[in-house]
Amino acid sequence: MQVIKSRALCGRIAIEKPLILSKKSFDVSTYSKGSADEEWQKVCNARQALVDMLNLELASANPDKASSKDAREVISAYVQVALDVALEEAIKEEIYEKNLPAPMAIENGGHKISESIRMIPDSYIRTRYKDVENIIDQLEECLLGNTMFKINEDCIVIANDLNPAMLIKNLGKIKGLILKVGADNSHTAILANSYDIPTLIGFDEDISAFLVDEDVIIDAIKGEAYISPDVTTLTNYRAMLNAFIEEDEALKEYIGKSAITKGGTRIKIYANIGSSMEAYETKRVGADGIGLFRSEFLFLGREEAPGEEEQFNAYKEALEVMYPKEVVIRTCDVGADKMSSYINVAREANPALGLRAVRIGFHNEKILRTQLRALFRASNYGNLSINFPMIANEWEIDRIYEIIKEVKDELDREAIPYKYVRIGIMIETPAAALISQRLAKKVDFFSIGTNDLIQYTLACDRQNDEVRKHLDVHHEAVLSLIKMTIDNAHKNGITVGVCGGLAQDLDLLDFFIENKVDELSVGQAQILRLKHSICLK
Image (tube, rainbow, N blue to C red):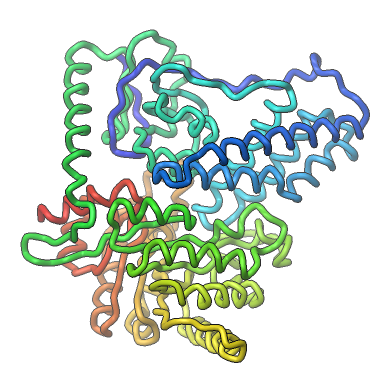
């Protein structure tokens, strides 16, 4: 028996035979290259074939089935990426200016776009570079006449990385994932969470270690994989797997139930979502509301910002689905590099500390004003709160209110109705936490974004494996800033929630209960388990 350690997603267990997937490199010696116009036409044909395939998958997904929502969202995002003008121009440049064959042009052009996305300061959005790389893989497959691999038997997939489209196409057969590379918040990871697929990411061993015809066990609680387990280990894990199945059934009793400790303390359990489609699943599992709607997904993979109507319809859908429960929508939280095509911001040496989030809104007020118009219009259809990210100064809040007043005055003049909207800010910089006593006097609520708060407090990029050992998420400094923020919020009569990764950290549950946090906002797969854990306290 061999044991391999790795980062874990979805605290679950899987036991199946392994299936090794590997991408074959393009061999230019076997490819018949034509003229530049002919090579470009091959790319256009491959792209159309890919879009047709994706649209067919989109049409075949049941819109009324909750488990299909995330898959439909990923497919829709892939269609946008495949049709992206910037990607098209990058590939065309490789063909016409460098005289490369179509497959190499797709590889090189796609790599340029994915690398620009990797420079985005927000780690959640930065991982979208994988969407481009996955589209590139599929474009090459369509161009070279390959078809996406169809899995016929239940298995644990082992690969360097996995295209989310492959996961969607083989849902039900893929019981677990072991990936050599990837980010915890990639589309593949998001889907794995949505479908409760045990996943390990970032192992050091060669994939050939898994070339066995015996069972492989994924323990996504410990972050371990067992290759060719002995009889005792296999028996123990089969018992644990059965216990998980029974637990899932038992947790269904918490759908719609409030999370209240034995001492009578209630904590609202909200959901984090990235699209209006995810609101349906959020409602199904009985979340108390949506604590973080990441609106930036509407702004990705395009050459211009989404218009007011497009945004309005997306926000309206989420609000209507969740009504009368609260929906907290965070204004666009992206960085300058990816959006330079329509924001005109120069490349930054350190984008994580540069123009991002609300700073971009001040830099390009048209984008912020358009989003606020859409949000306030949508407020008429539900219970909306608006959250502003990356706040570090009091004057930023003052400027936000000035813009909000101007937007509301415009709507009044146009006789467009809107409702009262709570205004809040993200506490994700040490500066905001340290002056939270003053900031609390200006807003209706705080949302503590622990992911950024941790990395800014500890000066550690949480996506950098080389400094991961320095990233102590339970560091005394981090917990002190969280406690300070909660105390200052309550002193000033406003609510405070936690929407970062620490919200689902059961080791901190007593800390949050003791400090009387008002809400915890987590991924949908964690909602019922978190409610259960609170009710046991």
